Image (cartoon, rainbow, N blue to C red; front, side):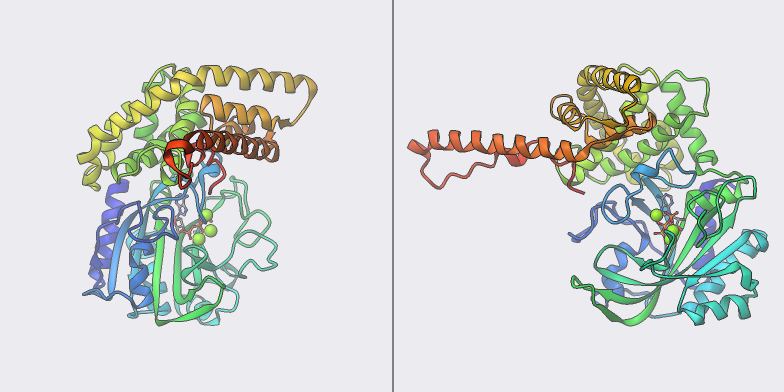
Length: 469
Ligand code: ATP
Ligand code: MG
Ligand code: MG
Ligand code: MG
């Protein structure tokens, strides 16, 4: 089954259970300053969960565009390193607004996976929130999952391992305990079951999270019960596609293979099995969808996150030998894969390509110099055995050659080296102070005619926001 058919099957299944199919919302959250980018299917329904907004339906299903490249859920550093993380991905979801709760949500999920998608039951492991006896009993007594494959997980407070089963969209907002479904890709892949020391491996891959929305967390961290208990679920389309297409990594699914081929074509590669090609296939989606939704590369906030992703992509292309703008040429391939499901992408194609091309040309003008400095230092470090890259140099690369800190760190990580970001930040602050002093000086000179009320904001616009997120 192609990933586009899987998306369709999911939506149709929930439509057959009385859910209204709702379109994906924009990646730029509407009217929600707590959120950098849309990071889950529930975002567009936040006010419905909170009881502030009413819809003509109490059940909905969506395929939601998500970006996790900043804020509470940030997977940028995982891309290229795990089989399952993207910056941009599609989250399939079903939602109950005070309608059904745990029992139906669990039964729907199980039926879809084991009856409609025909996954073997013994490959599935589930987790529940440690104190959630109700969910535990539904799984073990009603659905019939053997107790050894229903794992209770705490909320991370003092927990030994990374997973938790209490989902929060951000530091505030709707949240609640959850139950998650994992697929075992087999013993030949390193990694252990959820809740074990090996859980960060890629053997047991989390495919679906069912959140029982029960609280609204306020700024002080206090949990207020929601007007009505609700359900919010999220399943990564790329992850379920990998399972259904019998492959391990998301990058092996149909859609990604097409993008990897496009990346290889534009960078003249014959070996398709290279991490940089995967990164390019990932980043073209995030960049194109963000631009189609109105984000423009810039020096602050959302625009700076976009710029960082574009520049990381260009650096991977550069590593493969590209010396002029190439990345934007992958856009038509993406439109071919995803334009039918997301018409805004087709409509925005020309604009997306123009903006990417401009940004590429800009960075290609400085990348060569910057990379030469970076490479020289890394070569020197290899001789001395040093594992910490000089923060002053990282700052110079940032300030003079437009290398965001995370890009420098990405290059260094490939050599097992980390960046001294304390020294980087010291250099940043020093430069800010100098700019401020220069600003004051200019302001004093201007006072003669501009008056004492003039405020100098020049330093606010400098590209110094590498650590904002
Ligand atoms: P993980 O533990 O693998 O990082 P998560 O627990 O952070 O995933 P959730 O917040 O529970 O993920 O999101 C719901 C679902 O969305 C996940 O079960 C997964 O299928 C999918 N998903 C989450 N993050 C990503 C990502 N970066 N790329 C692709 N799919 C993702
Ligand atoms: Mg995660
Ligand atoms: Mg998880
Ligand atoms: Mg999860």
